Image (cartoon, rainbow over all chains, first blue to last red; front, side, top):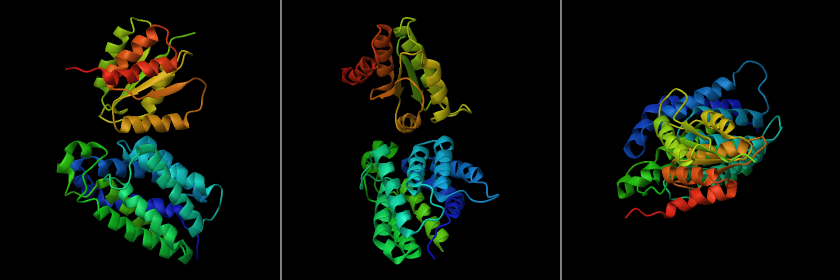
Length: 206
Length: 130
């Protein structure tokens, strides 16, 4: 019980995004510039390739840093830098540890959230990925004492709720913010892909 | 001491090249202005690789000021600066794209150091058109 296979997490995230790329693009076409699905899919494919599954997996922290780096250079759009910095900062928080428990993952997720907010300056309510990421991280931290699986499930539920809550919001960041009131009534694509990140975490946690 | 170099990062190759052409003109031949527009395959988007090449090409020892168009250009530049190892001052200016490029190149041509070039670019936000 207790150690997360981080490579499995990232690989699963990539699978979920690939399967859902069309929906993410559709969401992004409604209020964005229509490339979120394709961009994130491309970036994650590159991340998975960089983490090629031959041989001993590197320490979890290094896995996340490698994945983050690939996302920054290969994704394009805003999601490359944002997801990239999130994973890199999470990886840095994990250091050299060869196995990571629920509490260490909590610290890594908090670091990821801080990185996203520092880079993009989005706050909760701006109709961005932060609207799913912040509640997910808070829920994870709250449930970390119950172990990895419980915490990951709590995080996923909170991410889903947070993403759904973006529907009525008016966008205050990104291209969607140019639409003003016309951005209301649509699910934010960045929040939708953040749900997939936490779905992948829950799947990897077991 | 060499003049400050300017880098223009944009989602569009042609926009970056066009703005660079204009900025070079304003720099009266005294300023290196390097465009970093679009993705390496020629499409729309931003590229940290093109940014890095442009910064290296623009730096003649007097530092580099980066002007970004919007959105992911800004994010990409911020991350690049966070990661950057290497000598020399490279700074992202908070400035409008075209006006900032022109202001920065003009200041750089007059021998302004990095902080003054950045200030000139930022000031360009205040120029009203009506």
